[in-house]
Length: 197
Image (cartoon, rainbow, N blue to C red; front, top):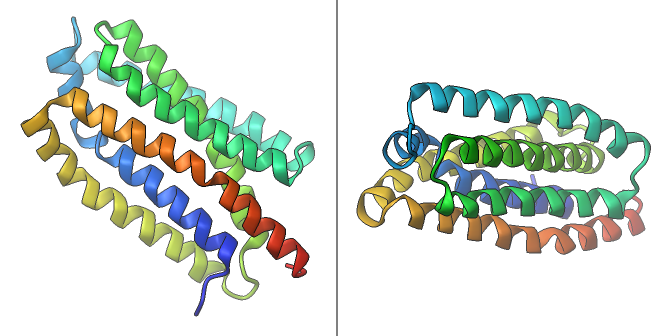
């Protein structure tokens, strides 16, 4: 089957985002242990908890506003804003030295990711093709999972050869660049709306 243009754009956008962040995921604990003063398994655990708590709270709050308050243009703007926050948080890891800085950046990452997902899930659900819901969600899951799988091994190799700072810069730049594609999502939603989607 042929995916409609909105769904395709959203899958590409999220695959780029998750593949980029996947460069960091498997080496994050090593980064904290080796590059953060006082870095330890406990710091990684607290940082992960902070990310998940902020993600969960902001996800619910932003989801309410996406459903009840925001129009289509505002949803796409929120998607772009969340993507920029996530990209910036990865870039700022280049300057992280102490655990508290890691905690702040994880909080930013959680907030940005929550804003992205509230928007992208709403748009995906709205423009998914009727009768192909499971298949198109399957395309989404497979594409993002394979992107992360490929990135996991590449991230380790990059860190070994060029250092953690280089990896964080690459990840941040890729994610920030992907935010530029948000206007194309807006164009596709306008076309779909005009066509009666």
